[in-house]
Length: 266
Image 1 (spheres, rainbow, N blue to C red):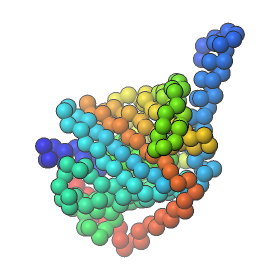
Image 2: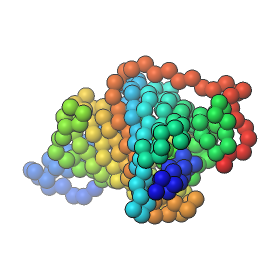
Image 3: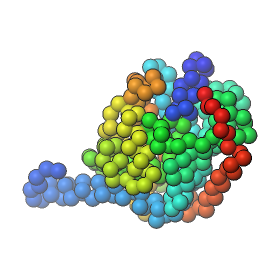
């Protein structure tokens, strides 16, 4: 079982209608407002500046489920951040060291990547070259990209408020279209989402968004169905990003050229 869990974890680290009057009109107006609220989350995050983030990548294949978790911080203005990503608890402690991931526009840097890379070296990955745009391939979704993906929202409904980490939050559930999101997002984020079109079995991605009274997201969750690339057909992935401590200063240090590994990566 441990071997299968490790193998699955390694895969992740390698890769409007007519309206009437009265209640109906009010419902439609509320739906439109909810849709715009979701679409504008990238701008809302940029206005907040930065935050602490926690990620979870849960992959299910057959009867096996593994979860990879990350913790760190993200600067939504510079579109950069750093996470310390740990593999599932089922893998013996120390068997696989935590992976440090540094997100930048268009590139991901990874330390303790494994696969023949020296422990003291970093690997640079051009995220636009990945078949999933790095939405799931390396065990953590870029926190800002998780919000950018919601620019393609095609349907959304508001569920009852619920308590999350001691705070009452709005709960919005819907479906976002990866094709539309790729068109609406700008710069490297748009390029990543275009690249992701090749990696998923269905461009329609279910999501849940949890928002505080200040309009800032507390959690964003996506459910992906992977395609046939790299033999991942039939694998479902749930990616969650949690946000807290908005305004916390986040310093991201890029590795110097001498610390980059330029050899082959397995």
